[in-house]
Image (cartoon, rainbow, N blue to C red):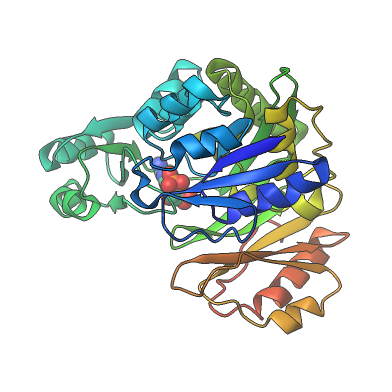
Length: 371
Ligand code: AMP
């Protein structure tokens, strides 16, 4: 089976690494002009003019993607010719924060109170109505904390509007969460569903730095609550493939922040930490194969390598660390790779994570609920 992937970065690369043992092959459609995937057939169509689209679609049996900010016209064109998983409906909702939040509300999934604003005055009025602080985010195209601003006072509206520089923003009440969690689920074309354990995520400057899975101190009820929220979304969307739901933990329970219709950075731990990684299960799901086991085999932490690759030799000498580099050049704020660290206890895990982080320049302190 030949899988077509829209995008040719690290997520596509890790999908392909997971797919070759299942006798799958890969063709990547890249519109950035700078594919970093490093193998497989790569069709570059810089700017996305569509010149290579017919060739791409002729090559492949099914199409998936590593990036949901895709033009809907493109995804609908693809769907008319080849199966696209997850479908354009999942893309349409997940690429638009207003539609995403409306769906959370419709399904009774707790989420922040919000308003939509289309100019600085409306942003100010929304901040006054909701009560500051509020978080303003561009309705479309935001990622890694980009296109966002926190308003401490309503009078910050003009400055925030100019900084975000978009046609529309979603204005959310600020949630006083105790920690950030995410849940990843896979649904196959056959309807089979599997859930990974909740992961605890630590961000720094808007970028994910550490994910611990299974998240420590999670009751069966909390895991169940997360599974029931993501299952409701999957069912409503008719989703096929991996879906990721980012959550805030609060004293009142879980609140949904946002979701992604794809493999996610907070699931990279599963490459070594589970019998079947999120990448493998995404491929199994879209190919209609039985899903693999999602349970964590040990306390595991994923550490992102950002901007500088650090001391590769020192990390390779550690018996408990697995290094993944993505074949990208060093650049400020860029995700260049990750390290998976495993241990038999959370205490040992915390020590090992700090040790690995000491070989990665610029790593923020490892903050987690372990201790
Ligand atoms: P997002 O792009 O929606 O994932 O937001 C990036 C980060 O901003 C999140 O990981 C949170 O740390 C923070 N954040 C987003 N929305 C809120 C909110 N409503 N209240 C408090 N913090 C938020």
